Image (tube, rainbow, N blue to C red):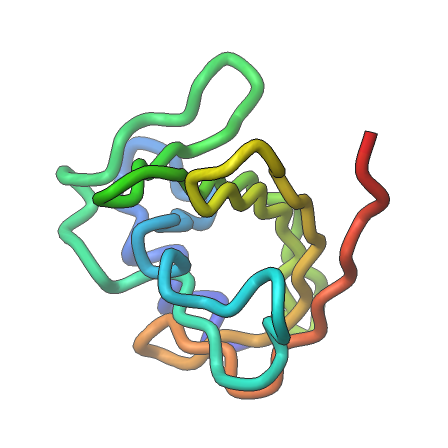
Length: 122
């Protein structure tokens, strides 16, 4: 519960019930190879004022230098402080891959043991 309270405090007064994801943190994850191989940082990489507002469908966008993008969309935070969110990853080619990620971030926004589900493509 402490992690959840701290994460919500990072969001600011505008939207205290919505945890703030930063897809720029997730750009270095090996999404297509093995996204569970290393911890995943989901917030704390930039000041909240530098993170773009979610679009009309609640996706927060980050363009990767050299091509591609990472989009993140918050799902939920359960009573055990486990976050569930969606990620769309495109490494610069024609394929876009979607994942559902579950995990409990620490105070620095790092999920040490993420559980990642790849969703089927179109």
